[in-house]
Image (cartoon, rainbow, N blue to C red; front, side, top):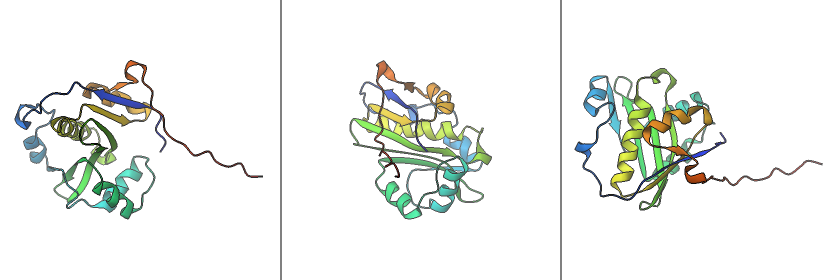
Length: 175
C-alpha cells in the first residue's frame, strides 16, 4: 500500500507524565470488562492472525518471518487481544531513534471490531508511550480517507508546509 501523505505530531519536549494522569477515551479496565487485553510485547502475538488483519484492511500479505523481524526492531508496539479468541484485534507500532523521532506504522483494527474505539485506544496509548520516552516528533503515514481519524489525536497534515517524501524505485521500461 503506497502512502499518500505524512502527518506529524510535533511536540515540545516535556518530562514524561505518569501513566495515571493520562485520560484515555476507554480505560484499561473498561477494555477488560468488554473482553479485551492491552499488550505491549510480541509475546503471545499471533502473527498469522495479525497478517490476516493486515490483508482485511487492504495491506499486502506479508511474510510472517519478516513481520517477526520487523517487530523485533520496533521501538514501541501496542495491540489489543480479544480474550475469547486470544487473537489480536487492534495493532499499531512505532520505530525511531528512541530519543527525538518516531514513525507510527501498521495501525489496524480487525474489520469485525471497528467502530468500538479500539483504534483510538491503541493510538492514545502508543503516543503516550512515545512521549514518556521523551520522543517529541511523532509522524505517521496515512491514507487520505482516514486522516480525520488522526486529527483529534493531535496529528496535523503537512505542519508548517513540511512535506514528506518516499523513495520509489523507477520501473525499467520493457523494450
